Structures are given as C-alpha cells and as structure tokens.
Length: 160
Image 1 (cartoon, rainbow, N blue to C red):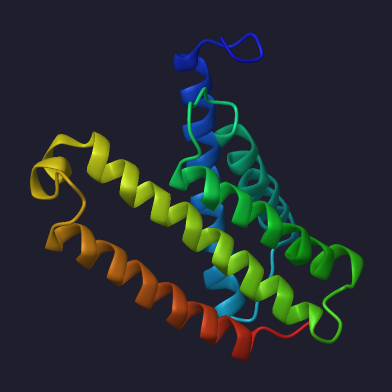
Image 2 (cartoon, rainbow, N blue to C red):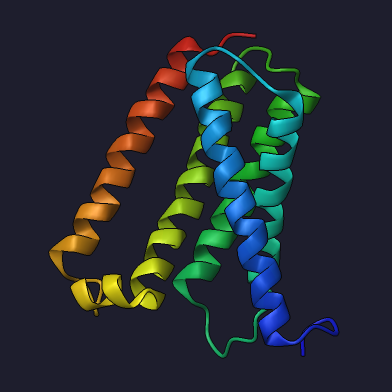
C-alpha cells in the first residue's frame, strides 16, 4: 500500500494520468506546430505531465531505476516550461524554454510508454524481449526523429 492505495490502484491511476499527459501532449505539440494554443489543453498537458512523474516515485523500489532518472529530468525541465508560459508570458527566451521543455517532457513520457509496451504487451515483448532488438530500437528511433522534427517546427512556427 502506498498513500493508502494498493499497488494495483496506484498503477491504474499512474497509467491513466500518463495516457492523458501523452494524448494532450500530442495535441499540444501539433497545435504549436500550427501556431495555435488551447489554454485548457495546455494546462491539462502540463499538470498531468508533472503528476505522472510524481506518481512514478510512489511505487516501491529497492534501487534507482531509469524511470526514476526520467522522472527527475522531467521534474527539472517542466518548471522552466511552466514558468516560461505562466510566469514570463513567453517573453524572450522563455518561449523557447516552454516549447523545448514541454516537447522534451512529452518525449520522455512517450519513451517510457514504448518501454512499457515492449515489456507488457506480449506481441511487442516477443519482438524485443530484452529491448536490445531492432524493433525496439526502430520504435525509439522513430519517436526521436518525430519529436525532433515536430519540436523544431514548433520552435520555428509558434509565436505568441
């Protein structure tokens, strides 16, 4: 039990928050590429992205895992992105901090989604049981290229 929740309940809540963060993050990034912004969608993306990192630390662990490192990195990047939007109102370099920070946090979330997919989905696990096989590398490579391309376009096109 963690915070009065069973591991099953915590897992469900964490996965639900993570999927909401990823779905709203994809919409957010596509909106930025199109030079649009939806205040509500942006707030949900940023809040659930913070929450997915925080809830990830609630699982019992005997050692520091790569998922913990991703959570720490995300929780370092996100405050700058959030401040860039809400505190600095996207002025000057804060627009870059917002776009790049949000894009990087989304990348980390989807990276972990792919890792979990290859661990937990039997068909994917059969293709890459150790995550050292080409299908896993291809999936992560596609994610990296797509994130860099969309992030670049967002930086170039999104204006306040």
